[in-house]
Every structure is written in structure tokens, then in C-alpha cells.
Amino acid sequence: MALIDANAAARAVVQGLLQAEGADVLALSSGEEALQALAGSWRADVVLVSRHLPDMGALELLRRLRLLPGCAMLPVVLITGDDDEPLRLSALEGGFTEVLVRAAPEQLAPHLRALLRRQADLQRARILLVEDSPAVAAATAEVLAPLGMEVEHALQAHEALERLQHQPYDLLIVDVVLPGALTGLGLLSALRSRRDDLAELPVLAYSSYDERVRRVEMLRRGANDYLTKPIDADELRARVTNLVRYWRLLQQVRRQHAQLAHQAVTDALTGVYNRHLLDEMGPRLVRRAGRGGEPLTVMMLDLDHFKDVNDRHGHERGDQVLQALAQRLRDHVRADDLLVRHGGEEFALLMPRLGADAAWAQAERLRQAVAQQPLAGLALTASLGVCVWQPEAPQPACAAEQAAEGLRHLLRQADQCLYQAKRQGRNRCEMVVVTAWP
View 1 (cartoon, rainbow, N blue to C red):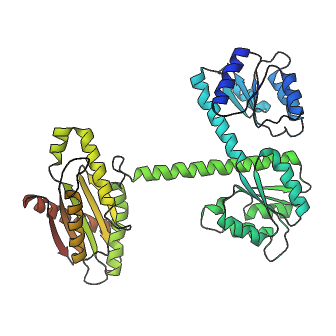
View 2: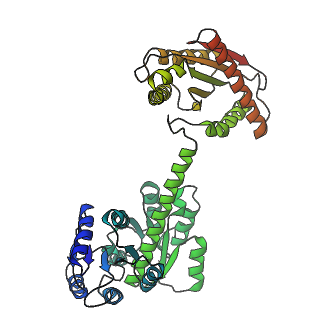
View 3: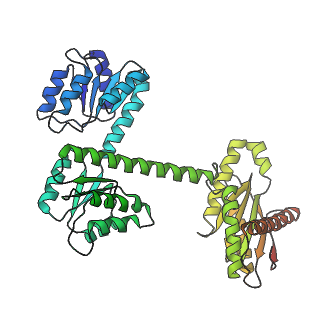
């Protein structure tokens, strides 16, 4: 990484922040020094330049830098002390990759850290190049070498499809004309017809034929971009960088979406599902049990005298008890059982294909699992109410609202059994079996 700043003190601060993040920094004080260093053997993956230099303007340095071999796609970041939106837009319009505002170290450090992380992500990118000419493939890989990306080569489309199904890639570069039964067009169609994340993998298509119809067809089939041979090195690197960034951003959005979706249906304290998921999945389990004529068991479990735990030991200890209880229950339920924190110290369990005898045995196992070992250092017990729905015969399909009302009825039945267990002295199970549509 190259850092160009005439102010020795400011340069030292930024250099220290970068080195703290593990970056190898070449610190320079003028534009000419930077141009000489980058024109020589020294290679940078990012250039940070101060707005004010003693021998030239930052824009002049950027213009001359872009003319150096291998620097046309080099990320160049402007560092300025002016937090001015028109200046930022002008710098981006002039060709700077990014603009960072010089600030206190604790404010600048996160921006530098994010910059280094994004650049490292690009360098770790994996590209699959599908080209039947080894010579062209080698030349293409050489052009992409300055980006620091890993380029793998496949001679035929069917080989590429096999690799894509078993290894992760960030970009597919494919020649339109390939030998064999599967052409470049066929590979693209096969990729876009998939029903998994691979269907959205970015594709850069290229060909020796500069025909409008061929370009349109590749784009129609789902290519993200198109190039014509012979390929301009700088243009190839620019398009590859943009597509890889697009893919990484899409992956980040997917991860964030999955995280938000998980948080939306997960109880923050215990890590088990919450009532939102119960409302979503519960009616489906009711409908499935009805269609198949299979039993569905609903359990309600409640810690005995939990209020005393909070009163005597505090709410923090109470939270620890609930966390320990949730883990204890997870250890004793099946993979396809639905465990939900229903509220407070009460947990609901939906257990598909669990008949009356097995349900009673499971309820007793759960009761004993709580009573036989302390929870967060406290000896406690639990009471359980069990409702087993055993349809006498497969039920006709029902609407979602009917299934939701059926679930609510089963939960009420289990809750009544739970209160009966409480009235009978606690630390016990009570069960009811229903056969009619709930």
C-alpha cells in the first residue's frame, strides 16, 4: 500500500493506523516520489493520497498514475480534511475510487479498516475461466494477475459446470464458442436455470465475433457483461473487478438478510424459536398431520416457582436459568421437533408423529431432565401439559386460518393440562388425547 502525504505528522498517523491493521505501507511525501516508486518494481494494491501535495495536485497525480503499466485499475483513495459534499462528488467524478475525510484517529481507523477488508476480499476472489485455447487462457490469467485473484481454467463447458457444482467461485468468464455438446450459451442457460444461489453467479462472456445479435443473445441468456476479442487488458480488469464486487455485495446482503430472518424468529435470551415462528410453522404442522392422519403432540412446559428465583437471586440469575433450561430442552428433543419460548418461563413444543404413549414417555423424560440436574446452580422442577391430537383418519385439506385456529385449540388444551399439573402439586405431567379436528 502506498501512502502519499506531504504532512509528516499526518502521514505518520495514517501509516500507524494502516500498520496496526497489518498493512505493508510505503510512505512518500510527494507525487513524483510516488510515480517513480510505482513505475519501478514496487507494487501497491491501494494508493492513499492527500489532497494537497508539494509538487502537483492530487488529480494530476491520479491522471499520471493511470498511465503507468498495471495501474489503470489500481484503487486510489483521496484523503482530505474538508468534509465537503461537492468536493467529494468532484473527486469521485475525477476518478478517485473513494474519498476519506481526515479526522481523529479513532474516527478514521474504521474507514481504513473497511477499505483494507474490501481490498483483501477482492484479492481472495476465485474466477473460473472457460476457454478451449490454453494460450488464450494463459494470456487472460496473466492480465488478471495484478488483481491478485485466483484464476482456474476449464477447457470445456461440461467440465466447468461440474466444478461450479462442487467448488465456490466469485465469477465465471466463458467463451461463447466452445467445443463439445455444451456450448458457452448452453452453460449459461444451465447456470441460470438452477434453483440455488449459483443461478446468480456473475458471468462475463466474450467472443471473437463482434456481432450485435450474439451479444444480445448472451445478455438475454443471463450474462452480466460481454467483451469482444482481442480483449483490452484494462477493460477486462475493470469489468472483472466490478462483477466480483457485485457478487461480494450480493453475498453480504444475503448474509445480512439471513441474520435478520433468524433474529426475527429467535428468542434473543434463550436462542430457541419465538412465537413468530410458532405462528408461521405451527399451522403447517397441523395441516401436515391432518393430511397424513398422523399424530401431533403439543406440550407446554413451565418452571415451578420461577418467580421465587427472580425475587431471591435477581433477574440476571433468572435469565441464566432460562438459558440453561432452553439448552437442556434442546438436548432432549428430536431434530424435527419445534421448541419455542412461549413467554416468560413457559416453553411450547410441537412434536410431529408422536403418539400418546411416546408423548407421555417424552414428557416424563423432559420433566426428569429438569429435576435431576440443577439449572444455573439452582435445583428446580417443571410441570408439563400435553395434548396429543390423533386423527381417526386423514383429514381433507383446510385453509391456513383453519389450521391456525386448530393450533390455538391444541395449545389451549395443553395449557389446561399444564394448569392441572400445577394444581396437582407441580413437578408432574398431565395429558389429554383428542381425535376430532381441533
